Amino acid sequence: VNCKTNCVILKKMMKVILLFVPSLLFLDPATAFFVAPNIARAELKTKILDLASETKRGLTATPEQTQEMLKLFEKLEKLNPTKSPLKSPKVNGDWSLDYTTSDSILGKGGFPRVGPIVQNINTSDLTAQNSEVVSYFGIPVPRKVTAELTPKNSQFTEVKFKRFTLGPIGFDAPETFKGALDITYLDDEVRLTRGDKGNIFILTRM
Image (cartoon, rainbow, N blue to C red; front, side, top):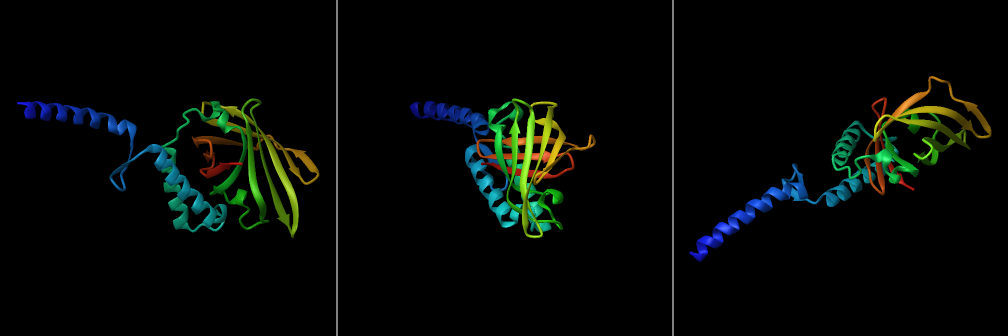
């Protein structure tokens, strides 16, 4: 009798455990193993940043590498631990662009970028600034653009470019220069963003 009672109790306990496991753990469909979300995030971030480094921010990425990065990007998006990125203080500060599919930002076919490409976000005054150094015929010249943010929800914001600076020269941006940022992943180290032209951006905290 005791054995039967214990078996019944054990079966009930197993049912309860199985009900809670999916909410506590992340199921990786590729391996059919349960992986804790923080472990899955760490593994994905390592793969993403390794590939970003290998492809020089995406500058030398092959079509196959671009597709692989997009798959990793989408997997990490699903594990976003910050549900309202634009309302989180984590989004503020300087971020280094580690990878993008935007040819213009990478300078493909043009003048090479020297050193980091930096984006600063400040949600307290709703501003952003991109800065970089570009080599013009071997001469490094700093460039930056300031922008105004108009959030539409807790993760999506419109961007209005305000002023461009090229070395010592500054000029106002045309009224038509606009964009958008959709922050789809944010933690203490990494930020994933989608642009209005379909490009993806992977940035790391500086």
